[in-house]
View 1 (tube, one colour):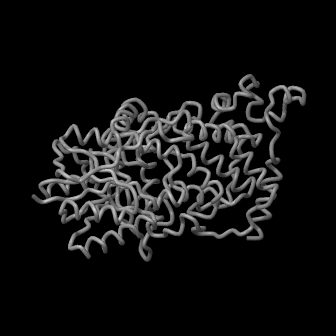
View 2 (tube, rainbow, N blue to C red):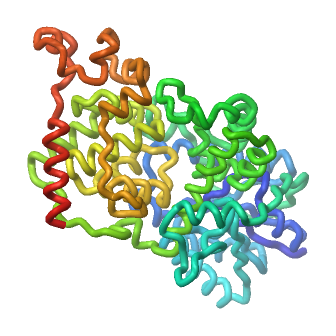
Length: 457
């Protein structure tokens, strides 16, 4: 009996899974394997929300495999060692896995390839599993990646789409390879109280409902902070419980302005993955424009603490940060405003904010988190690196009635609409009654400091 191993990583699903389908076609039996990578945990990339969501995903993946006659094999430790152990235990000749974009994933893949080849085995890496098209599939003349989104989008849109694959009906797993017990969400401390459920069943349910009921209005409503009209599929895309390629296929089939806008967001995700795949150092180093005058010291530390706690005195920023703590997720417009406020108005190093987001975000994807932070901070791919988002103007535009602010900043629940984004304009006695903090800095002062600092860089 021939055996192949399928190493699951950020693709915790059975539908549209090229590595699994290839393994089933090439062998009599497969070992569906997930390794709890101690390298990821040691690097601080396993926050409570992502560990809890992962527990849901692994439980759903195991259940789906059991429905098809199989099961998930779970191991913990160094990925290369554990995969080679499983291959030796089962006599597997091939290991199938999805390509990753980060430097860590690329290095792990190369080490695994060498280790397997030393034992006479083969690693088969599949592209376009995590993204719609693979990083590097389209490149500009004279470079290994696109540094500007619009030309990338044009080329990306012209690529022939990959047809989604159906889930297998039967998965035969050989007798023998033991598995550790699956983790439980309930056993993870420090989880956000409003964290959504994970797993392929939930991801596909959410995707189907949103494509049916939310897609058509997406272009007009995706920035409506109070309306909460985004897909909320980012955690499922991060863990791969839904397929980006299948989502793009289904949205294009539906058609219309909302579908076009949603597909464009999937392209933004691919864009960041192809940047990181070509420039892995962008996960921690300035991608394009280096800045060396970020604020440090006690005053900056106090501002950072206020930002993390959602007590900056700017309601829409504070609402976004409080939603983040409660749900492990926050609205995309809120992310932009919170990031701009920290990196430009407070002039704090973007890495400080990126680390905090990775601690809390259930969709804390290294490519999208780090490169979106760099885009906002003016060190990344933004062609207008000096733009500063005004939280008052943005709040009025994207939360005009203040419903989003009132939802997450209950101190301001009864404030008049005209003051909800500028509560410091209220009379002093009324401000004291609400118990909401004064702004940590005036916007004009922050803008002037930003311009001075950028003049020195």
